[in-house]
Image 1 (cartoon, rainbow, N blue to C red):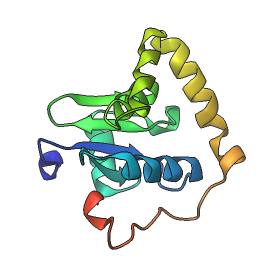
Image 2 (cartoon, rainbow, N blue to C red):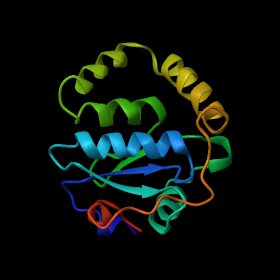
Image 3 (cartoon, rainbow, N blue to C red):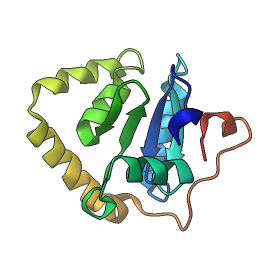
Image 4 (cartoon, helix red, strand yellow):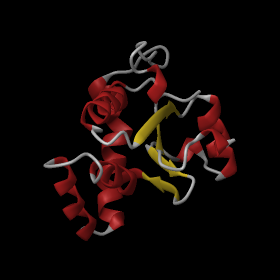
Length: 139
């Protein structure tokens, strides 16, 4: 399953049909100067394997997931803040929001996630990375 993920990489699993999620992934790719992240849609084979391995009920979760073979899995606002911490200044300053209790951060996250299709739209299929970006995506 996750043996494909190099130890020095972290995998971001995202909703491949969500416009907000796709735009966020494009933003991370642009600002990932240290090449920390690789990506896969939740709908992909590796996404399904991790979801099954961690017994995640996707019907109860609208979330970005951050997976590392060393650190396991992080969800929702914690995942988003951990991702931001690797993006350099000024994005890494978002870690200050770790002082906000997770239940409050996740309430805001859930509210946005619940409305993301209505506010930002939805694609019919997962995004297909360009040739240049293909190496950053796992299947």
